[in-house]
Length: 560
Image (cartoon, rainbow, N blue to C red; front, side):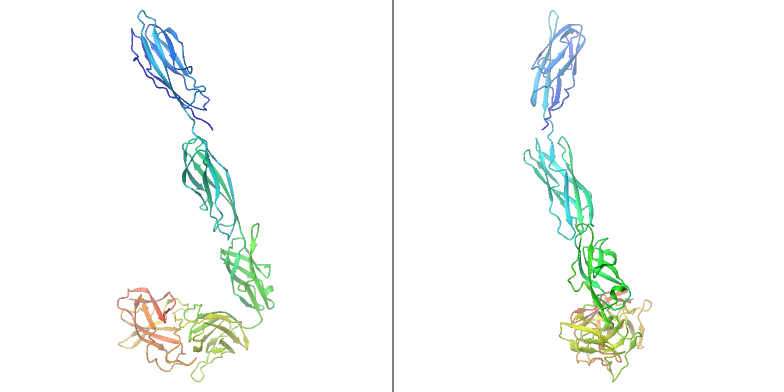
């Protein structure tokens, strides 16, 4: 421990210095200061004696004080020195007495003080370097500790970190008591960091210490760890398919991750920590098989995802239909179907190469079109059209009450693997003008006076208090019930009391909600009056609610 010794000198003059026949001593007092441990002595000072007289000087107070010369004839400049030597910390007083050699001697006394102060205390940190290891996907590492110790006084400190937002220190400020170390926590939060080496510093500032700044270097190593795979899309491809790009979803991906199929590394592209794409070469799809899909994080601390999950594989199917997705034909949203809903199945080999629409038979839509059927469980649904890439059908009303149903497409007597979808009481979707499931609704403005219909568009807007016509599907079971695939021959007798429409966030008066004459049962027309309080705009939102289930968001009409 380095002790600081401060020396201060204060003059106390029992007899004020004064001129006697020109005799004068200046300054009237002297003071010295010293810090223990300082190898340099306090700077010598001067004592000026004026007047044409002889003099002699004497000292009292201790051997630490010297003056030279001690005798002489004024005017003289004397040198006064202080040597603290081994004196302990404290305050010391002495005097210099100057006496003239005249027949009537005169005396002047100059007080001298010496103040010895202890050197500032020092603070030490237990370690100058902290090394932290982290594997991606694991919880954040426990904080590392560094101890601060003081060899003397109670000292206050503050901390600051640099190098990245992943690094912090606690506490931000505190005090260190002698013999009682203070603990400094070095905290690393590497969640979201890419694998690699990171460096930061924690700076400890102690304004009153001998060394005022201490630095702790923090080295963080982030290892990639093993990724996980949750889903692969598409999960099924036909035998003999060309090179196919798959989308892999999971966790803990990073640039450098490699997607594998059946153990073979694929050309991979990083999209984000949860998404990657990769290309399965045609050679891996030449014969029916199942290709387990994994993702590997190479390098030290990396790993490979598990391949046990059936959702993390691609099935190469023998020639035949592949049903990849079942969606609401109006909203193009998946997730659930309802009795009487018009659905579209996307995939490959679902029907003839050329789109084939139904031909009505006996006032109904048939369940086979172009040698294609869509089965809901074991019940075929009326087929609106069939093609290789997509086929549209009506959901049989008989699935009401089920929780889920398996949907298969059968073409030329070969059936696809099932797609299991949940069954809801209603799944309303509004048809849109561009067929995308969002944007401008497919709607007409009804001019009541002439009885004319005008297609609503950006240039032909609906008006407040006017009547509009919309088209939707997914109403669910009707009352009275309608036969599957029947073509509507008469308007519905009453509005479904479980159906409502909101335009611009306001309830609209529903004038009609039911089947469309000439169209298949399951497609409904809604006639409604635009509320008078609706705020005009180019994209006023429309929401259809049936049995508490809302239609897709993002459907609008222009209102002026």
